Image (cartoon, rainbow over all chains, first blue to last red; front, side, top):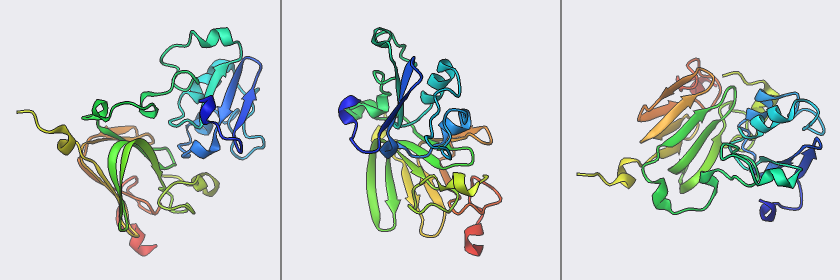
Length: 169
Length: 64
């Protein structure tokens, strides 16, 4: 993960016990973080992450819900990082399988996942063909986020505008 | 007898111009707001935000 971090907009936040990493370029606005834990993850606040807003355990659980690499975490005590369970999806050392390189054959037969997010976008994950206008693109082992509120400036993709517009649906 | 998986499971996601999102093939649809899960084979999902039958398209985009 460290080698992939770009210099510009990435941020990190700590409460002394864990550090949460934020890569805005990877965010697809699935909105799990602020729906689950607005006390910590509040997109309308600056800085938007307040590590004092909830317990370490609750923050870990919420970061683990992020479907992309936008949010990840690790223990500040490096000794504890060697001992993290495989259910800790977004721990920096446990990247979820679909984000890691592996033979395409291992993905065959795995159904594509289409999630309609609560008052948010459609998150489509897996291997599929994306047709848009005259374009057709093969999406391999990846994830896209499609706008459902009609207000995104980056159609057909979600840009997070649903939150500002108060989209219900 | 085993079918070729690549063809059987091919999923097509089509962003229709000025209309809904059409998804067809072998996919699992989970609606987190309405707590529903299904494998419909084909679905037309609202992209305009106006449908009265969310997450599905009801043609309201034409009156937008």
